[in-house]
Image (cartoon, rainbow, N blue to C red; front, side, top):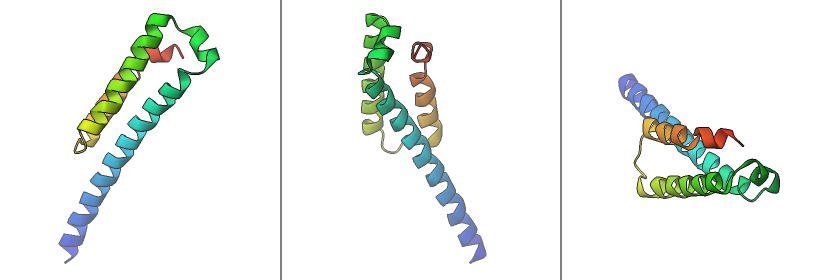
Length: 90
């Protein structure tokens, strides 16, 4: 019984970490989307950079919708891709 409880605890922890990674990716994407409406942010970006960021945000949100069973590592990889050098200009 204790072994079962330990197994379920580990599964719950993995699930929690996956949900947190997904939420972090979604929050970052939505934050970037909102930033694209901020005049102060837009002054720092070229039109081309803005288009790249908007496209990347939309691609990321679509990827999340298409991959509901992704794991923590996949979400973290997508987050890393979203936080590209262009985004650092913000």
